[in-house]
Length: 406
Image (cartoon, rainbow, N blue to C red; front, top):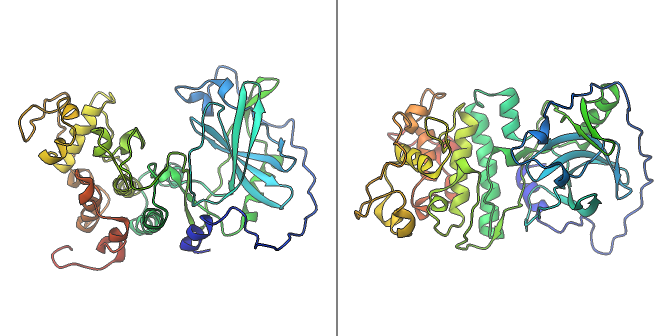
């Protein structure tokens, strides 16, 4: 299924049935009994998975169990991963005879996504000991590009792979920005998933649980923490996922968004933001997929994380911000720059040496086209960033050569 087809079909009604056409009920599969022995038990004093999150509180997470069936329909067959607001699981849909992914949210979070590209199939609530948990049922997908890089390509992906991934990401964002009027706000490799051309490929994960049960850590009689399953990725359509922080309309919008290291200049200066924050993320995503080191860490040389250190790195890579940009929020400007019209850096964090794009880029024999693309996405002034449609025509993506560029 081509990626563009995946985008357009995913934004249609959640029902894929034509109006007036009755569906033929399928026989309900029997739930399977999962192994109760034959697995490694992890010691109580060893923190694993979500327990390693800095703000982890057990009572906020619903204690999903392998083999558990939700809605008399979705049987949990493998754990796929976790985050600060949810755990993710592969489930067998006993009614429709296919694999789906369940995202089980902590009971204090809410899902504000109003559009999606990764197809949403169903949603429901479950009640745990400490409150209600939202469960979203998505089409099953493979691992994220972030996890693929971490496991298989820590030195970075090949340039051609990055070109393909960024092209598909820009197609998705062009559709969202121009047709859906949606700002995603959370674009990064962790939210770019490989889809599946064949849903039955996930059967392998289920069978692995019977052949070699995953290690787990019993906490209480009702709570067990499982290790996540990994599967070597196969070719599939690219899916932009996780619209939990998406905003509808061009804005300007306000509030904290984006992972800390991905925050665009306008968010750091508390200026209203819109579609260009997604373009800033495209530039950093392209960099992170290609390079082993991040362009911006938002940390100083001692490893301390704070906005001044982040801004200092931006200055090192992009040069000082234009005075007209700083003038958009004089109070915030005064936290980091003096009263001079051009704004002299107060030095709350040192501007690091050797953090130019040219110095940090380490993979390409000829990086001029790539760096030109990055500079079109990473600009201080949001309105000077190229649009997704513009970047789709960039010579680095299309392979066209410009005089003097190569």
